[in-house]
Amino acid sequence: MPDRSPFAELERLVAAGRLRLVYVLGVPRSNTTVVCRLLGERLDGAVYEPAMPNSVNPRRHYARTILAAHHAARAGAGDRPVVLAIKDLDGFVTDELFEFVLSAAEHLVFTIRDPLLQHASLSRQFVTEFSPLHRIRSTMRYPIEQTFFLWQLLEWLPRYWRLARAELGGSLNPLRAAVAGFNYSSWRAQAAHLERARAKFEPRRITIFDAGLMRLFPDETNTELEAIAATYASVEAGPPSAEIPGHTRMRAESHWAEEARAGGEIKPLTPNALTTLGDPAADAFARRVAATLYPQYLASFFDPLHRQRTAVRGKPVGAEIPGALGTLMEADSADDATRRLGEVQPAA
Image (tube, rainbow, N blue to C red; front, side, top):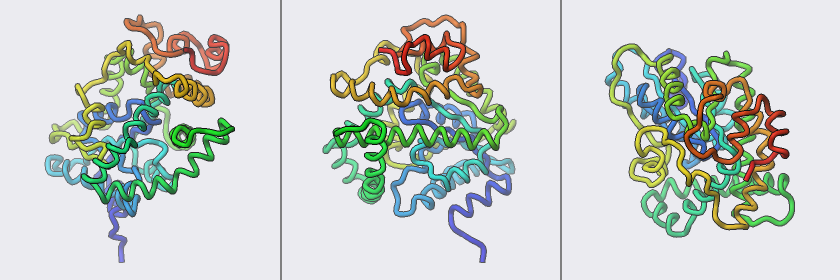
């Protein structure tokens, strides 16, 4: 008998050309949500984080979430394929799921961000996300999903702690180590995913975006997003975009979704984008983590697939440049940036 599981149905739709995907993969806090939303508005819809492990069967949950978006967009699509933008965090995409992504995606967008600002932002998010009050509220509203998410998280925590200890050594605050370990897992997964994508896709089908450059040059970034969407969108008018959350944090009524989708566009840089944690110990820890991630960030920033960097180079900047971004914009290569910075670490 044919496999009638949701994942098999998803694979059949892709194989038959009825479903096409533009996939956004990023490290956490690197503007993945707004990039996915802007692409989804230009395509048939957006799906947010279906790979989040918040179900007894994450693979089934992943497929059902994408199928729900396909179903929502199908009515207005007529005979043409449905084209969806999908956003996931690299740290949650397993090898098995990435095999599907490689087989199904028309285009891959990878997002990066200066590790100091990125890790500080992730730490602030975790402080809120795992506060007792927020946990109680989330569990009361979505008890099944939150129970399975906690179960999956407890399985992943030892790996996160090991990753943090291997990079940083010594005795670490358990919560800070867990956040750092998740971040290491995300950056390493992104490097592996980019390498595998490069081996299969033509360069024109892979794009790297830097979140800092997005904020400094929102018009140029929107132009690039328009070009990506125009390549894969149908010439026919499509239905209103469907937005499907992969978990409760991305549902329309949640604080995170409201923050990520506010304004419907990439926001220009503001002075508070330079703010880190405000706590000396936490800031010092964020700098330690960022210093170990900086070589990979430089490699991605100067990757030829990061066409955004080339497009904005030499353009005047109308706002204060966060971290070491100004130096990177002037440098010719990762080695040149390292020399200019003095050390392979983010500038204060």
